[in-house]
Length: 446
Image (cartoon, rainbow, N blue to C red; front, top):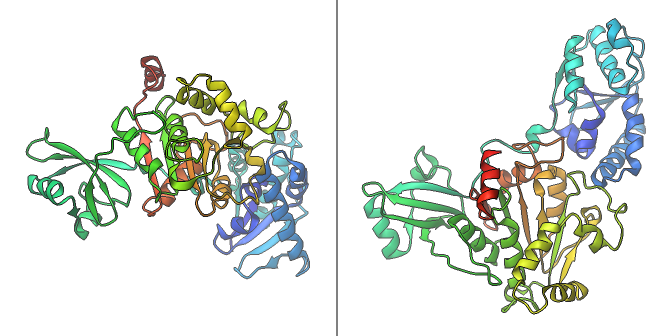
């Protein structure tokens, strides 16, 4: 049976029960130094780290009552959980012996178990820990990356070729049914999902082009020319996003795009359009706009910033404030108008730190900078959504500040690939920068 020795960062990654479930039945060894490190996170500024620390502590405490953890306690899933106290005196190469850090103590536990003849794998998210482990002959593996995202992220749209007959059918009957072979084969339509947009051209005449949307059964013509709060989409992908944002049947919208692609402006404009007491129509019955974001990817407590919660979060949500000011740029006094909406709680800036336990009803929630969120943080947010609410989650995967995440492995990418095809979900990747030619050059060339 494989003996997996866990680094502290693995236990902090997600609730401990989920950590265990992510492995096939095996021995899970927790060095005593890891428990000491976990104790430091009970008062962490990071809500998710605090939660995962408490979950691990409670789980292990329950096991303590079932048997001797120094020997190992078997759980229902077939895993054996063990706390390891030994191997502090395991011999390291001379150069490594001078470093007394906890990382090296964890590696010593893995090496000691290996020397005793066990089949050991050290599991850590720390690259250097894995490198040192390999150097002393201990097999190591990364953890959690495959649970934070996938390569080949779903775009929400595709380009295809259609026959002239199919195009005529689509325009005349307003529906083009797709056969199972087309959906599951290897052609242009393979793997298409509900709420995905299609840019098509005639096989024999590429200049004969159009746009459609897949409704789960067939392609239907798409001719969206909607505006929101006076903001008009400037390109095709912005039209796709506006369509999702204003659709009352779509409860979760995600968008990935570079700086200046219009994600935040469209999200803010569409939300304001649909809120009672703000938008001309107040359609869809939303009562307010709530905006939140991760504080540099780690969901730090906002207490170190001065002022009220809104004032504290304004430092993090300047892009939303810019969007609000642009939407109301023609008002007599834009700043007074925005402050009035804030005073009446029609617009709120909230810290993610305080999201746990909340139930978000009848409102639009915009989540900024979501590329800095882990899978667990995304899950925390989405489980807050109640009836009548709509969540818009946007980010730029090329600007990640959370050092534990990457462009293809983060909570936003994970969500996009996990939710694609759900009837209440839609996504658009925004490839074009509309802010300015300078911004476009910076995104494309730097």
